[in-house]
Image 1 (tube, rainbow, N blue to C red):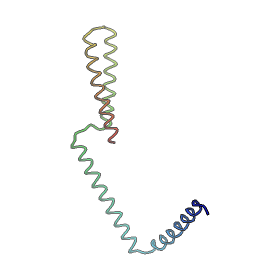
Image 2: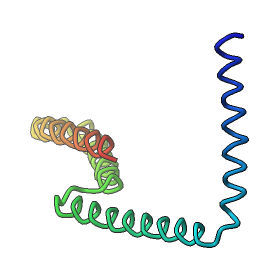
Image 3: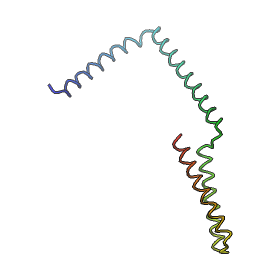
Image 4: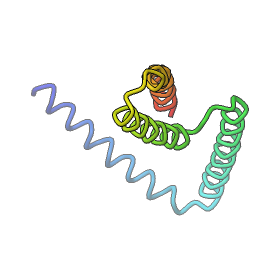
Length: 119
């Protein structure tokens, strides 16, 4: 017998034993009540933990991913409008503003990456 055959036999034995046990257990009202109560408590604690985590993230006052994406899109629009104006007028002042916008864009991209990682 190979190791795989032994493993397959063990899995089959485990499935049949667990099936018999669960069939017996599902007819026991006391056990079902206990399982239902434990599931209810687990879900209640999960809800409470989710609320606590939401409050904690809100307390950091970080923007949500949707807000970062919206700001990024708006920034791209403003950058393209500024480039169009620069092409029309060709002023050095607009070139300086465009350079300033590049640093803002890099910062926004960094924030977006951080928010995406934490999500």
